Length: 217
Image (spheres, rainbow, N blue to C red):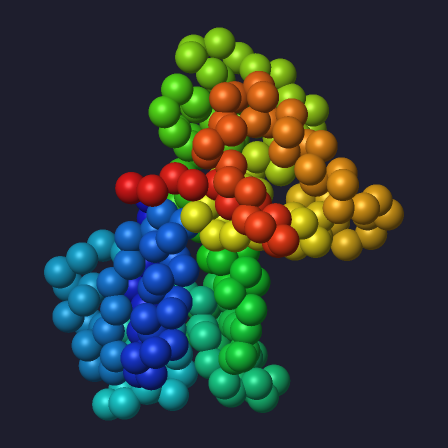
């Protein structure tokens, strides 16, 4: 899985981001000021950097000038259009303004990693192998047929594994904002996926909320 460097001076925010990224399988490291980034890059290879702008010692824009070949997402409270333009012109792949929803951050991270081809193309859990690029699923070596919507739901659960997702959130991500159905649709699709893959104990029901795909390291 991709390795991500989190550059954020507020420790509670840094820890929260790190925890949520690690829950879905990313390997993370943290630094808390701009001057520490060069040392981190000298000793490690990262697939993505999450970079605050207002940092001690060296601000995020100055840090960005030192980064050569690693994708960067700015995470900052500076919402001014001029700052956004500056960050993007310096070469950032995205610019997210605080406060942000953690689900949005995970989606933006995934999008950048997909564009830069750093996202894992295969997910394996027990006897199930999911080819995310080819949209194929195998159980005990045999291909299992899923409808396009079922596969999109599987993909959503994998990308947000170990995170409890409400039925409404699953509808929003896997079906889209304009879907006219109700949350019972999610239950029907989850039941089908569980049955086909033997995932009764993998896709957990979260009481009065929704579902969580458990894939602990």
